[in-house]
Amino acid sequence: MDALLKARSAAIVGGQETEFLKTVDPANAKLVARQRQVFANLQKLGVRQVGFQRETEYVAEEKPESGQGAQAFRVRMLIQLTGIDAAARATPLGYTFAERGGQVVLVSDDDLAQEADRGTYREPWDLGPIEVVRRPGLLIVVPSQERANGVRLANEAAAALPAVRAATRRAQSGILVVALADKRSMSPEWQTGGHPAGAVATPNLAPSKADETILEVVGSRVVINPTERKTAGRLLLAHEFTHVVMAPLGNAAPTWMVEGLAEYVERRLAEQEGDDRPAKKRAELRRTVIPELTVLPIDGTFHGDYGDESYGVSWLIIEHLATTHGLPKVIALYTDQAKGPDTPAHRDQLLQKHLSQTEPQLLTALKK
Ligand SMILES: [Zn+2]
Image 1 (cartoon, helix red, strand yellow):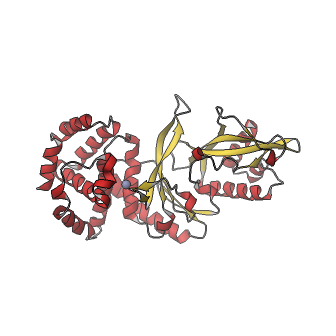
Image 2: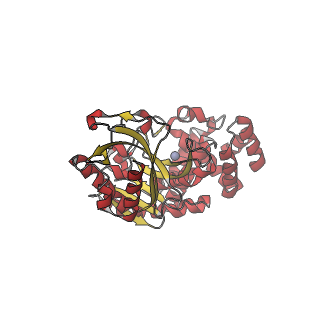
């Protein structure tokens, strides 16, 4: 069985379809067709390395419906896309194996799909025929019949990247952007303030070297909501790419800082391109919400206290800090905050350290 998993890895990296399909039950035409599609998709994406590991702590389930002696295993797929991922990331699979004609083969790939911790989304190579469009540091995945939208998104993404790099002085080796029509490409759990996000920067997880039962963040990818894939542009992508490049710093930064910086990069790009909406929004917020502000937006109630204006408020705080202290100081503060701990006392200390300000002083200055 482990030899079979090794053979699958080698066939994918080597581009050998025949060898790959030898690991699949030839009598199951649907499974063969699906596996052939997965193989073709992975070849399009470009796989630098891939491994399949049985999750050893998991007890195999008997699956008599898949044949005598059939057993379902939890398998961790570890995959690194060429030119995009700096490291392999993990994605959970459920594989059922059984003997056919004296040989162990894959007889089912979806027996465990309904289990809650298998994830509520599917990988882009699992959702039918894809097309990919490349730009330096970018890989856009679209349905096979939507190449034109892929090219459009690649151009938008390429326009967003320099804005993100200029503001943050940070970059990821490459970013995968998923823009599929299939709803399963995006998890219903990926929400912003109770409604589905237009797009999300979702963490790439890999087992920690010290303890492989613990997953750690090794990068991020961007998944565009299927309903937004035809309209998503450089502004949305600049926002998500900002999350991507800041993610490795840690996850303890206050939400207003995380979202405020992403909004700042997004809206600054909009203004650079002559969009007058940020100026209008700024004026409106300074007239309505900002004068009422008594504390910085609080993590737990971020989407509650100001509703959809939480993002705008956070944008103006970051913009104020960037104007008065300079963006490098904002990034330095963010870097320290992201490391944690995310306690109010520690956050106050860091405001003092980087900006020589207390929270009330910051708010007073913001309202001027
Ligand atoms: Zn965001």
